[in-house]
Length: 209
Image 1 (cartoon, rainbow, N blue to C red):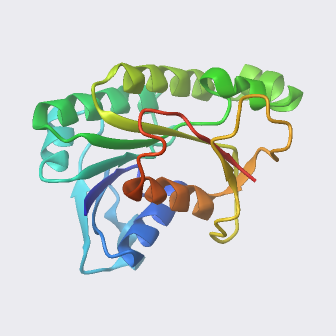
Image 2 (image 1 turned 135 degrees about the horizontal axis):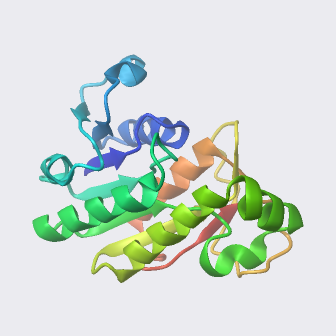
Image 3 (image 1 turned 135 degrees about the vertical axis):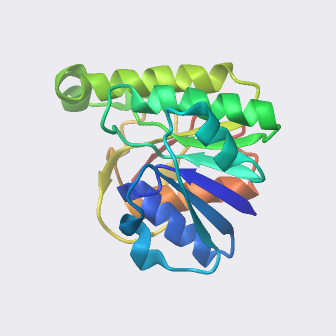
């Protein structure tokens, strides 16, 4: 497939690019400015598109001709980058008729707030990461209101480590057996698994060990 990844230079994005290439996909990495962050990923099936996710024309030009769009945007240099960038991605996809959208959100968004413990619910997302949490909430609203074939993946806190495939997903809100942690490599693996399955079409699976 022809995939485009927004947020390709982030910690999840790099894993996603690497794994997608290893599976034989043609990958376009959308980057804001610094191509050098992907210099070590020299690959015949990798293209780099320099643009700004806040620039609608840039986003539209980048998405044209692709089969699937991945969004793994980080907090970025400006507030609200996830929500604002995602809205531009959605608008471009709807304009171009590109349907499949796989977007990384966070465990704790929406009804998965019931999965969080006191620390994550009130200290991290209630105080330290409040702005980032609200950004994800708005991002999810934009995705759910779209007419796209979307999947919103809600991973726990990121850890280092290899892709294991040994994780829980799609668990019920309030599941106390989960560890609220997941490796970046396993997040990328699960995101790519959505290419071959409609199990979570227009759904919001949680992801955790």
